Length: 240
Image (cartoon, one colour):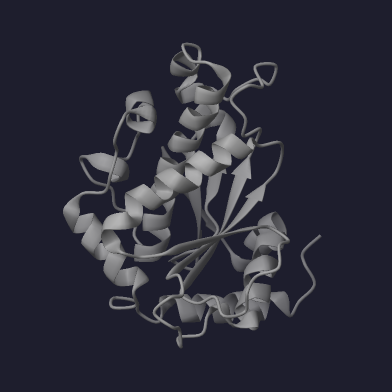
């Protein structure tokens, strides 16, 4: 389900340099400022889709992600890659990249039959805020269920599944941990039923942990050190 990819700063810059630029650009606009009003979101997610995606899928993904985190009373703001971001945005910021075709109706597109559905990147022991989601791997896992539904419901089910994978990765990033749990979203491997079933949520202890971290009650200096390291890497031309 989850893969942690260890990279040096230079290697990571070469692989996903656009995500680093996006994050640093938003940080310079004030996204990393600790001074926030109570109405600002504690989590900002910038979405980057490599290929086609469905708006119905996207709407369901955002809705399910909100339902997963709603017990924490933490707000989430969403932006598309390249979209102008309000400079008052604060809190934890991440750029989520969605690889492959994120549509459930593209049956002409081969689906992946192996590999993780989500992954994060390690640099110098830090889990970077750039999770990768493999849409085609997720489609492969839930393919049997999609074959039983109509077009619109297929898009909704794909959105539900992607939200759960994204929530899993967000937990790794925010808590800076590679640990998994025996139940719920933080299982090491999520089945088709886990991804599209009626409900899949964090365990109470996990909710408390991610809620505290997003509200700034349990964050250490790791993300500040990481931002500084990425800033230093951006002072050099991207590797060829």
